[in-house]
Amino acid sequence: MDILNPDIELIDGCHYRINPIDGYSFGKNVENLPYQEYNDEEEEDEDKFGNETVQEEDDEIPNLVLRDDGFYVTKVHVARVFLPVLIGKRGTTQQRLERETKAFIRIPRKEEKEEEIKIRSKRKENVAAAYRRIQIMVDAARRKHTHTHFISIPLTNERIKKRFIEFKNSVLENFSSDRGICEDAFLKPEKLHLTVVVMTLVDNFERHVAINTLHRFKESYFDSAHLNEPIKIRVQGLEIMNDDPSDARVLYAKVSAENNSLQQLVDDIAKFFSTAGLTCASRESVKLHATLMNARFLSLRTTGIEDRNKTFDVRNILKNFENYDFGEVLVNSILLSQSHSADEDGYYSTSTKIILGSSDKTA
Image 1 (cartoon, rainbow, N blue to C red):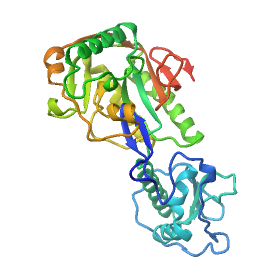
Image 2 (image 1 turned 90 degrees about the vertical axis):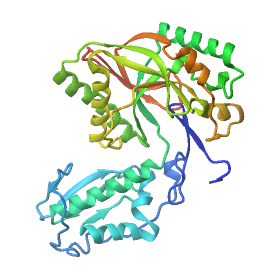
Image 3 (image 1 turned 45 degrees about the vertical axis):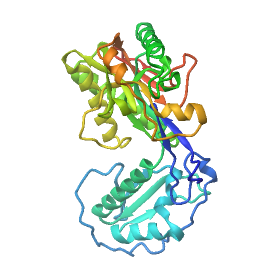
Image 4 (image 1 turned 90 degrees about the horizontal axis):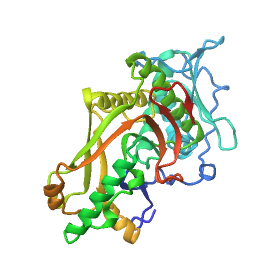
């Protein structure tokens, strides 16, 4: 990777450098990645660990099967881009995992069509230990890479877009002499949205899991909460992400709904996707905001190179538009959207969506 000119990805108005992992760059053709071979001999030495046990919490292990030969076995999907992390140089990481968890770990070789890792031990606790270690390592590797998808709530009705364009034009007309205030700093009106959670989905399997998870959320959440109609929300008022309006990086519109219904909805979505293993767990509530301006757009849109030190001065904007009313919108759909993409209407490309108050699945 050229550290002076790294690959950049756009995520919800922010730009992130794509970090390499163990010598492999994310975003390239996974099938062409170098692959470290490790000759595991599980069938030839199946008594290697015997009945040794690793003490672990007795959590539920997905797809766990007790075979007739006395071995507990489970399979876990790991995208091929992450397999080198588990194998290590000359198989040293895989061997260490097996040694520390007392379980056999069968990782598919490059030429095999199998896409699941098999974990096997005569002790259930050892399978659980290996399963959790693999999940932790994959999650850590995933966090180093750019997000590819996010759960979004569009804020693109004609009223909201019209008021946003009026706001932008007024700001440019009156305050374009303020530092950093220019058209490049604004989000496109067709992409106004709320971000609920972001995800890194690197293969078709993970994308299908995310699609099914969103629909499973609707089935479980809406049935239990009886939330079967759209939520009316108001977009009004301005705020910044940091404390100094003279040196701001993000300007956003505040969002609210009656009875805390929207906050409850997005928090439940975030928790549901975290439980499914698609996002990292967070103890904090989702911050409801609609990004309007982002200083990172300034350098990237003009030079193609991100300058993380870019900021703008929004003191006059906050003074004159502090309580600006963008209008109301009915939230009637929740989308699994693809980052850095656009459909014909200008909004992010949609992988699937659910409709509030409808039992129909739209893919």
